Image (cartoon, rainbow over the protein chains, first blue to last red):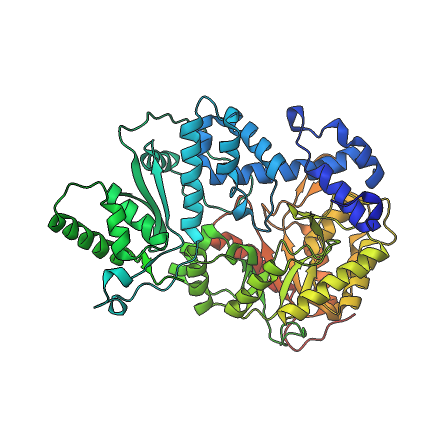
Length: 292
Length: 283
């Protein structure tokens, strides 16, 4: 940010007001006294409201709108942490990262990274909270992420596996989890039972729910994806998950299969049959596309 | 026939805002609606259900785009990434004009997601008009700017809100989306005569009119869009129509959204104020 003295009067007043509007609210969700000087310098009072009162309207609207959006997009995380701890995390996140996109859809794009860097904000639920945030951001991507033209199988017929490279739809996120987040999300969805929960009504907060979970004995390989315009969670066998990951990473089909079954003791006939079954399913789901 | 060049002299009648809770009703029942206004940002996505629904709506209805985050009054220039997406969407919707607010909302890449009021200065006039011209040139579409409701006034202001609006639209050569509810809300918060505002607006630049509900608190009025339009707002609407003639009109209802039929019924109250097609407006 350049020094205020070098800005035009318009840029200077917008900077000063934006700084005040984005300053976290104080106790009882009122504006902090630190904003008093800016309020007086920028805004006129009227016969009913002081400059402070007027700036407070915008300060509160900013925080209520952004906190409401995060609470809506990360309902599971909120249920893991509880309302107060979630709000502390959200305020810390928004103070540090703010919104860097014109779309509120992107508001949570850095939340996973922020939680990773600040484990103290989610303790003692840190591992569960982190995984929940990852899945919930994956859900945002699956909901409205791009979809490339699906793979035409005719285009790879007859080509050796060593020369086939396939793409994976961009709306799919592959995750390795240590908690049954997919089950928790389904349970939460059932519990909320709010048919208007996707209404545009800003600031409406979901019902207070709490969830806990124990780590699973084995990691869960999960794909968060979109099918017929709805978001789904699909558990995968570890080999299938590794194969998809390798394909997404740009490996040839032959090499991806090699990576997927690197430690497998299964006979080649068995693995071939498995791969055929997976590809049939993935083609039906429209998961595969040409590499861009 | 409409008297608005922004609508290519096509009569748009009375529309309503397309909102998620009404998707199913609209797609299944296919109610007769003159047009829908969409919030552009809800459809500036790369895929999925929002675009699928939009395409279905476009098969049956006329759609006009209304934006909430171009921030034409920002001291900085418009965001090109945003404009690129917006242009792609305008080609999809074939919107005849595009509206956004006469406000600012982001600084140094940080977004408030609010429609913050402008200081009414000559510098702001020039800056905002420059931004609108840039947007119109880029999108190759007429832009209409909407007056926002506000709760604050700046020490540095050098003119009234309507003088500011008039100066901006003249310099930018753009249209106005006249929100008569916002005029009423701001008039209550700042103590001016709302009719003076409506009378001062250049009628030939009014591309569209918004009506909506608001909420009175003890010390100020808030633009809540969460219930029916109140009488003082209908009075302003009647006067605006008297001056502008038949103008595309839209009801906004964004919170505590009732059934589609209730929203539509409320919107259609505007129709009784609209003159017949051959009646000329009085300035």
